[in-house]
Each structure stands twice: as C-alpha cells, then as structure tokens.
Picture 1 (tube, rainbow, N blue to C red):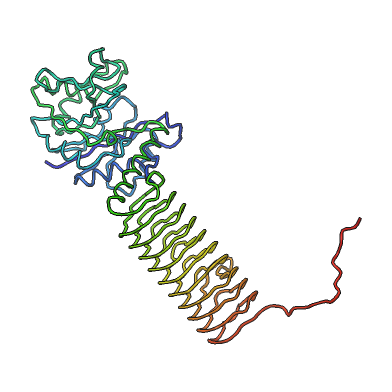
Picture 2: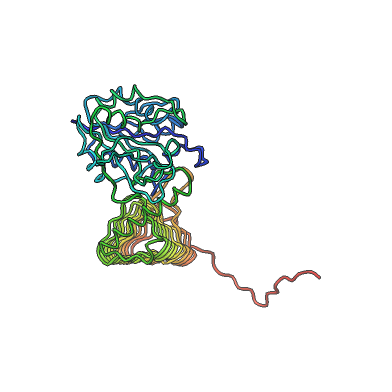
Length: 453
C-alpha cells in the first residue's frame, strides 16, 4: 500500500503565550512543523495532510511552497476528530499519524512502526518514562498483548503506576480508521473524541496491536511552552554537536553551538564558542572559526581563519583567507586565496582578488578588486546614487590610501596609487598617482580660541 501521513497542527498552544500558531515556532531555525514534514518526505509518503485550525491562514502561508493537502478542524474536538477531517482525501493506503509539535521524531523509528502494519495489525509507538504523569498508559493483558490505552485523567491508581506510555503516534490502514473513527464517543472527562479509543475497538475485533519504541524519549517529546521549546532546542543542538565531534570537528564547547540548517565540515576544523550556522554552510579542511561568529549560506575553503564576532552571509571564500574580527561579508562577496578582510570591514557583492587586503574600517560594495590590492583604513566605495547601484573596478597591485572615497562608476588601472584622503570620481590610469584633496595651509603663531571667563 501507499503511505499517507496526517500531521495534526490545529492546536492553539495557549501556553506558548504567543499570537503565532504553536507549530510555527522555530526549532533550529525553522518552524517545528517543517521538521515533521521533512521526516514524512524521508519516509516516501505519497501524500501528506496537515490538519489546521488555530491560525490556519498563517500555517497555510508558511507551508505554501510544500506539497501538502490541508484539512480544516474548525472546532477543537480532540485527536480522533482531527484525524477524521483528513480521511475523505485518503484512499487505500497506510496512514501514519504525526504531530506538528513533536519535531524530533526520526524516520528510522517511524519506518520500524510502519513495517508492523497491515489489515490485521495496528501500529502504536510507545515509550517508557520514569515519570509518566500526564501521559496515556498502555494497558496489556497477562500475555503482554495491548488491549487499550487509558488517558491519565481517566486512569485508576493501578493504571497510573504503568510506565509504558502512549506517544500519540499511530500507524493504521485507511480502511481501519474509516471503520473506527465514526464510532468514537466524547463521553469522557475532556468531552473530546480520543484517537486512543480505537485501540480498544481493534482489540475487540481481534486485531493485533503491534508496538515499537523510539531510541530516545526525546524523539517523542512534544512542545507546549517556552521552557519545553528551549529544552528541545538544546537537545537538538547537542545531537548535532555530537555528530560533528564524531566526524572529527573540534568544538570548544558543544553546549554553546547552534546549527540552523546544514553544516558540512572537512577534517581539522575548529569552531569556538557561541557560533551560529544558518542555511547551507560548508567549512573546508583546517578552517578555524572564532567565537560568536555567524555564518549563513556560505562556502569557506580550506585553511581560512575567521576571527571573533564576524558575520558571513552568502559569501564564497577561497583557501587561506583571513576574516575579521568584527568583519561583515554580505551576499555576493567572493574572496580569493590569501585575501584578507579585517576588523570593522563590510563587503557586499564584491570580488576580492588573490592576496588583496582590506584591513580595517572600510566599506567595499559592488566592486572588483584585482590581485595584490591594498585598501587603506576608512576607504569606501560610493556605489549608490540614491536610485541606482554602480560598480567600482580596481586593477591588480593598486594601493588606495586611507580615508578615500571612490565615487562609482569608477575604475583604477593596474598599479595605480590613490593618495590618502582623496575623493576619486574619475578613472585613474594604470601606474598613475591620483590625489584629490585641498592643499594644506599652515599659519604660524596660531592662537587657539579659549573659553571666555
């Protein structure tokens, strides 16, 4: 049978104390419901259905680029009622029921559960908890067969002593669900239609209830408040850190490290404390990343050194470059081998040639720098005229003195020199010296003004 995945994402999440629907709160830089969708894709789901309710328009907008069907649960009447909203769009298939606020579930765990399901068996993911308070308990007969699930509020003292708990994650056939869901009753403490009641129906029909369990209880932990959100964020990041350590990456402190996307590292990479990686990031062999650095959607080649507090966004950095501290590389920056962008330098849409240096306190945007260029402190490329951006073209072996303004569009030929403090708005020929500043005036015996008494 094909596989349909139903993700329940209709809850309000009042304990988050937020106007944003709970499932849209970010874990590792993306909405938690998208983690669940990514897992469904790994399983090869034919169709994925997202049951929405509170903040439905926001959820639909966030997931507009995903191949999902939306089912509206206009009234919050429990998990059984929520799943029923999606059934009309499900044919002859296995159905896996997941939750938009349980983001760390692994595809391997779910594949093991799905393998247990057919027309004669129903699948249930259970977990052993030292403190099962609040969870539904798995009730088994003397032969160990599951006979039902009792919600915590409905359980008696003996049942509350059970430590095997319901995760809410269920795998069944569409035919089974279509047979059982219409028979659910809301005659319980909560006045809701519990999905868990189908297990007693299955047991009464002699259908086996097969169980599987996650490798870690963290996989099935849900998020209901900010504290739980923070705890799962750290658990996620610790897992990513452990993977990198296993691959040979040196982390100064695995507990102070965040990946919000994908990070691929070569060998002998060092990452200091407080670093954040977003989007798609690659660090080549021997790269060193200083503390409190943010790198987003960038490729950093081998032996590059990135000093503390730098921001690198949408950049391509070749080998042996040196960046920072306090540098900002904006999208479109490309650094060639052995180039340097120093402290308090900002670049944008700039090609910096091999061995070229912008050491400090400069802005270089919409520009090309050839090989061996030296840009003095305080230099800016004046690339914006208030309406349009213009290019600055700098040849090989050019020296630009400190506090220079290069008014684009302008070009400096190979080997040109620009004197400090100049404003250059005309092209400079190769090998020429350009100086554009007032002549110095000196007045002897100058009396400095003094404050009146």
